[in-house]
Length: 426
Image 1: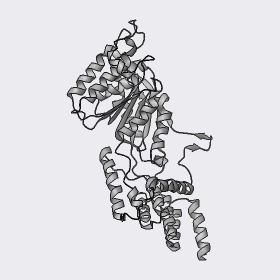
Image 2: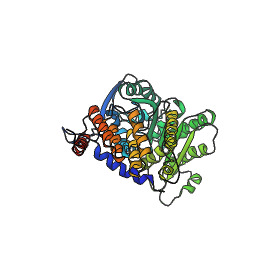
Image 3: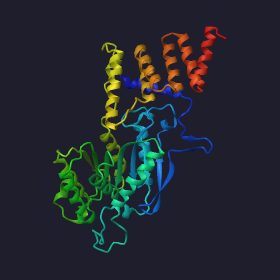
């Protein structure tokens, strides 16, 4: 059996060659590579204007894309995580030839008063030193009010945003994520707490969170926690529970939280966590975000296609289409709205079958793309390539011509010119 992933790689080379342009990430007027835009929302709740950094999937800029709604990932400490999360999701999504995670809108929230907004309770004394605190605290629930009543409505009104949401935060941001989980579980589908500061308020909030998670139901919600190695040199994680010093209170608080979740399996929460021995508090966000995305969207990746490339398997076109339709029905059920197979993904599969001399399967996939994306010039161009592979020059010419009618496609025009010359057509 030949590995279909090999053909996917070939297919994307072909697809990329025939695409007229990459979807407008390069701003030619300024020679800049742009991955997002700065928006702002005036908050009556917070009494200030808040900037937000927004990344829109490139496919959203193409009117042929169906559906027009995207899940949204909200990330705190925005400037520190915007670039990495945006690049990671692009790498793992259909835009880069993968089906690990969906394309998403990313909303990164810069800080104005970080300690005020990301801590759930007010404290007067520093937990570690015992000194009076000179910074604001305890505005966490007011900040969540801002997100729920002002920011999220603005995003869903302004951008092609679905109501499927993921919330990501690190350190104090992770504390805010846990606060949202226990107090606003209706607000997000997924929660990612990266090395959260659960020592806050002498662990008083930790105890409240433990109590709520132990008594309430969180069906349909997911939480992933990343734990950094913040122990002093020479210690191992097994030493933490027996240590009572302030040196380990940060990691000890997190381990208390995740271990309690491990022993509780009746509240419906889809829960996962990982200890990153080689990462400290500052380096752990990147690897946690990567693992969290794979954990949260375990149901998104397409599998089971290799058998269709085996000529001895006797698989049919109908069976291939059923596998694809069933998979995307499951995705639609998880998101709560209809999701069509991405054009680029189906196109790549089609070229894979075409290059493996399985023209009937290739044709069925190209036809599926035409059905889902009738305004895309590329889907007709690809169908024309398939007719060429079937040595049907007349039908190929028809579809290349259709591609030109739908959009300006220089590759289709070149193929038309060659075919007309070969067929002696004026």
